[in-house]
Image (cartoon, rainbow, N blue to C red; front, side):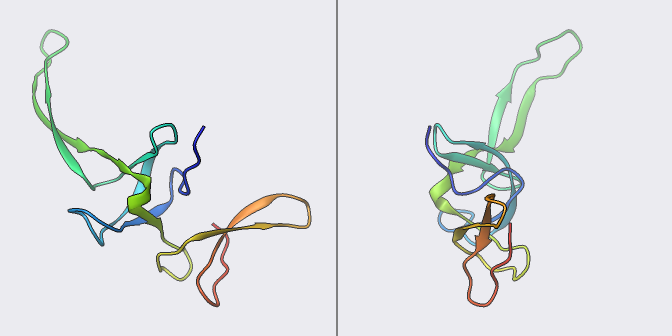
Length: 107
Protein backbone atom coordinates (compact mmCIF):
# COMPACT_ATOMS: atom_id res chain seq x y z
CA UNK A 1 0.00 0.00 0.00
CA UNK A 2 1.25 3.49 -0.86
CA UNK A 3 1.76 6.20 1.75
CA UNK A 4 0.01 9.56 1.63
CA UNK A 5 1.32 12.47 3.73
CA UNK A 6 -2.12 13.81 4.71
CA UNK A 7 -4.92 12.21 6.72
CA UNK A 8 -8.68 12.60 6.81
CA UNK A 9 -9.58 15.75 8.77
CA UNK A 10 -6.34 17.65 8.01
CA UNK A 11 -6.56 21.19 6.68
CA UNK A 12 -4.64 21.49 3.41
CA UNK A 13 -3.74 24.14 0.84
CA UNK A 14 -3.73 23.38 -2.90
CA UNK A 15 -0.33 23.95 -4.56
CA UNK A 16 -1.27 23.81 -8.25
CA UNK A 17 -4.21 23.71 -10.63
CA UNK A 18 -7.43 25.69 -10.88
CA UNK A 19 -7.85 25.79 -7.07
CA UNK A 20 -4.28 26.96 -6.34
CA UNK A 21 -3.94 28.72 -2.98
CA UNK A 22 -7.34 27.64 -1.65
CA UNK A 23 -7.70 25.81 1.66
CA UNK A 24 -10.05 23.03 2.69
CA UNK A 25 -10.48 20.02 4.93
CA UNK A 26 -9.63 16.52 3.68
CA UNK A 27 -12.81 14.43 3.47
CA UNK A 28 -11.34 11.18 2.14
CA UNK A 29 -7.93 9.70 1.32
CA UNK A 30 -7.26 6.94 -1.21
CA UNK A 31 -3.68 5.70 -0.66
CA UNK A 32 -3.96 3.08 -3.41
CA UNK A 33 -4.59 5.78 -6.04
CA UNK A 34 -2.58 8.49 -4.22
CA UNK A 35 -5.58 10.84 -4.25
CA UNK A 36 -7.51 12.96 -1.76
CA UNK A 37 -10.94 14.62 -1.74
CA UNK A 38 -10.93 18.14 -0.28
CA UNK A 39 -14.09 19.81 1.01
CA UNK A 40 -15.41 22.52 -1.33
CA UNK A 41 -12.60 22.22 -3.90
CA UNK A 42 -12.22 20.62 -7.35
CA UNK A 43 -15.98 20.65 -7.99
CA UNK A 44 -17.21 18.33 -10.75
CA UNK A 45 -20.69 17.85 -12.19
CA UNK A 46 -22.25 14.38 -12.20
CA UNK A 47 -25.31 13.35 -14.17
CA UNK A 48 -27.47 11.28 -11.81
CA UNK A 49 -30.35 9.03 -12.84
CA UNK A 50 -33.33 8.63 -10.52
CA UNK A 51 -32.90 5.28 -8.73
CA UNK A 52 -36.27 4.93 -6.96
CA UNK A 53 -39.83 5.95 -7.72
CA UNK A 54 -40.35 9.61 -6.93
CA UNK A 55 -36.62 10.31 -6.72
CA UNK A 56 -35.40 13.12 -8.92
CA UNK A 57 -32.45 12.85 -11.29
CA UNK A 58 -30.38 15.69 -12.64
CA UNK A 59 -26.97 17.26 -12.54
CA UNK A 60 -25.29 17.17 -9.12
CA UNK A 61 -22.15 19.08 -8.15
CA UNK A 62 -19.67 17.16 -5.98
CA UNK A 63 -16.02 17.29 -4.93
CA UNK A 64 -13.68 15.39 -7.23
CA UNK A 65 -10.49 13.57 -6.24
CA UNK A 66 -7.11 15.24 -6.78
CA UNK A 67 -3.58 13.92 -6.48
CA UNK A 68 -2.18 14.10 -2.94
CA UNK A 69 1.06 15.59 -4.30
CA UNK A 70 -0.92 18.75 -5.22
CA UNK A 71 -1.79 19.50 -1.58
CA UNK A 72 0.25 20.48 1.47
CA UNK A 73 -0.80 20.27 5.11
CA UNK A 74 -1.47 23.49 7.06
CA UNK A 75 -0.22 23.72 10.65
CA UNK A 76 -3.07 24.24 13.15
CA UNK A 77 -0.91 26.51 15.36
CA UNK A 78 1.02 28.80 12.97
CA UNK A 79 -1.48 28.54 10.08
CA UNK A 80 1.24 28.14 7.44
CA UNK A 81 1.61 25.33 4.88
CA UNK A 82 4.25 22.88 6.06
CA UNK A 83 5.92 19.60 5.38
CA UNK A 84 5.29 16.98 8.00
CA UNK A 85 8.06 15.61 10.22
CA UNK A 86 7.74 12.64 12.56
CA UNK A 87 8.85 12.66 16.19
CA UNK A 88 9.05 9.67 18.53
CA UNK A 89 7.87 10.39 22.09
CA UNK A 90 9.24 8.89 25.32
CA UNK A 91 6.50 6.25 25.40
CA UNK A 92 7.53 5.06 21.91
CA UNK A 93 4.55 6.51 20.03
CA UNK A 94 5.12 8.39 16.78
CA UNK A 95 3.49 11.82 16.19
CA UNK A 96 3.37 14.16 13.19
CA UNK A 97 5.04 17.55 13.75
CA UNK A 98 5.13 20.92 11.93
CA UNK A 99 8.51 21.60 10.28
CA UNK A 100 8.15 25.42 10.19
CA UNK A 101 10.88 27.30 12.03
CA UNK A 102 10.04 27.92 15.68
CA UNK A 103 6.73 26.03 15.60
CA UNK A 104 7.09 22.25 16.10
CA UNK A 105 3.36 21.85 16.87
CA UNK A 106 1.93 18.30 16.86
CA UNK A 107 -0.82 17.46 14.33
